[in-house]
Image 1 (tube, helix red, strand yellow):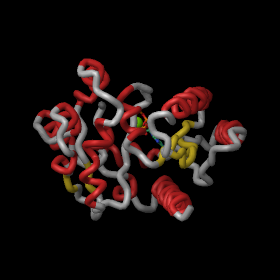
Image 2 (cartoon, rainbow, N blue to C red):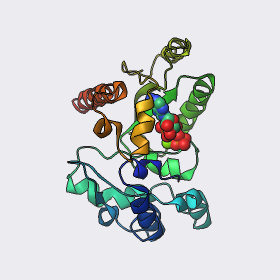
Image 3 (cartoon, rainbow, N blue to C red):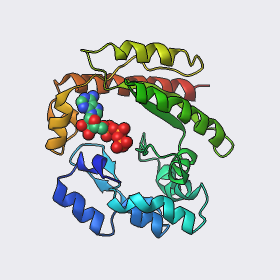
Length: 225
Ligand SMILES: Nc1ncnc2c1ncn2[C@@H]1O[C@H](COP(=O)(O)OP(=O)(O)OP(=O)(O)O)[C@@H](O)[C@H]1O
Ligand SMILES: [Mg+2]
């Protein structure tokens, strides 16, 4: 709803133009339109996105008002999925556990759970597990691919503590890759670019690349079964 992801790929004036126009996720959901007509090419090879809108903040209310079910998004994504043009469709979910996130889960094959290396980050994990467990009724094939520890501050010990606590959830994978705090991420945001494009040599760019490789490895592995 803050359009952060869209702002990572386009300058602010373009993002505001997408948001105030018709070409955004909120409009698609509101009109219940097939999402393939809402895709925008980015400046990066093989990377497209559907722009967000500040109105996404009222999406819960829209679902509630219209008594829409949990499979609306899955339905609107179907054409894109069937076309098979994309290897991965990534959905950035808000931390609010309601019908919008339920729709995202029902439209997904896997969940990746980022956990901030802080006491409050850990606090959210148990809640999230409970929510995922409950949603299994609606999305029985959904798999939790793993948890990724992020924003680890080298000057503090909490990264190790976070790792130890998460390892106690034995049935859930913790990714080997850890994302550390890196101010280059903020500079990249300041430039409306992903860190990988802003500064490929940045530590976090390397870490995110490693994470992507791990994701690919586990997805491949799970498809072979
Ligand atoms: N590895 C990092 N190093 C430095 N800063 C970071 C890092 N990761 C995230 N940040 C900063 O923290 C902010 C929040 O990060 P991000 O948007 O990824 O979190 P979020 O959990 O998705 O937040 P929200 O709940 O608002 O969606 C970002 O604006 C960014 O500036
Ligand atoms: Mg977010």
